[in-house]
Image 1 (cartoon, rainbow, N blue to C red):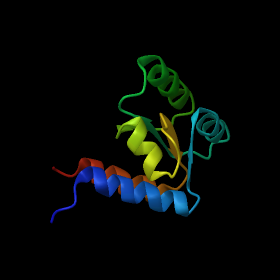
Image 2 (cartoon, rainbow, N blue to C red):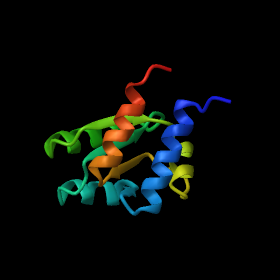
Image 3 (cartoon, helix red, strand yellow):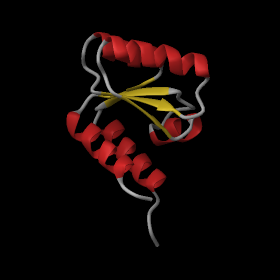
Image 4 (cartoon, rainbow, N blue to C red):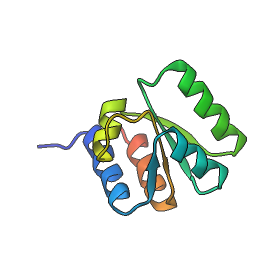
Length: 106
């Protein structure tokens, strides 16, 4: 049984959560970007256009790369929270692995 890309992303984000290398929610993600701790911003695919624009502008201001992944429910679930529209990875290793998974052919 092959594991899907979404499952691999969820597993990786769950590991990052257990390692305390990811923060989620608008306030925590913005704070991580302002403090230059965030290395990759994750935005849920079904977040509102207004929210996406806000997060992209903030990430651009601090020169933090962004990716759009999963949906709010899936992002929240793999982090052990309710739905989440945004999260920020704080670890370069987790960020590199996530980007590698996203680049692979489905």
